[in-house]
Length: 251
Image (cartoon, rainbow, N blue to C red; front, side, top):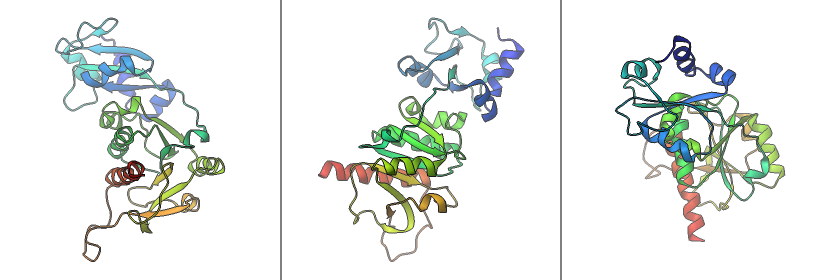
């Protein structure tokens, strides 16, 4: 049985302020809750209904379908929910040296961020630097969109210009996706470096843009025909990451 205070606490974690205050976030679904055992994260509690394939897991709390409805943030509640400690990760500029890293400049859509984290995981990218105003990666919608990739990709929040400057001083190349950039398919690119993805509507901020070493552009096809104004941030990220990895394989 769940008590009112426990229900209020779990539901409250849908808000960023509560997640910050308690240092906890919520994971839902049999797949994502099941993967927690090998994720290296500290789990506070796991709640399961009888229809969960994880039912009977040691230490899990059994609750009714009605109780799951009361704590779930999903339109159609799942059969498994976990409250997890937010990992404490310290930004170290050297983590970008010799690696391919993403930097997100004020992204606002949790679905976009979740998909980008999943893309990073697919392409073997282990670190993402986020500006302080980028949507919280522990937002429930973002967590769901990562499909467990959040367990393997480290997301760092802070003053993005400062993080980029420190990485640059450590000898890391900085790439920016910009409309006035050079064709990515024709431009020489390195195996490692930081790729900056801008805000969905405003692009890369002026302060961050000053730190870009190489300006990249994703051309539409064919180049002389009218097309959409731009690509979705997550889609653009996938295309850029694919090209960086393709070049790496071709070398």
